[in-house]
Image (cartoon, rainbow, N blue to C red):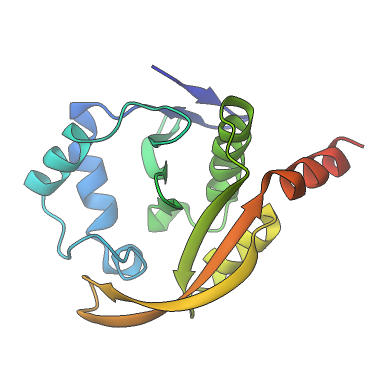
Length: 175
């Protein structure tokens, strides 16, 4: 079971006991409105199922619980077809999503042979788009996706981070 550590966070596999905090975090509409594939409201039963079906963390498919020591589950970062993440609203603005996503991206590129990671965000989700740009993602297109929370199609900005760009950005951070 892969577990990653940053200076402030533990990124770990989901546990059955995470369901109440997971459901509480994503059933806040301020969070849910940005999570295109998740239904709203998101119930405890849905959280139990979601976590039970979470992939074992491997370089090609992963879902890490973002655990703030002393506080517990504050969000989630996943990498399947795309990188995705959420942070409970009371923890917004503290850099946790950037820290967690950066750790997962670094781990992914270190343990896989893929040449890029894709991600997307609602066109008006400025915080997510800024975070992705800070991580090195570049816009590669746009499409429409159905948002279950909003119950209509939403324009998404499609982004991509190449291994080469990641390595270049990481080498500048270390210099």
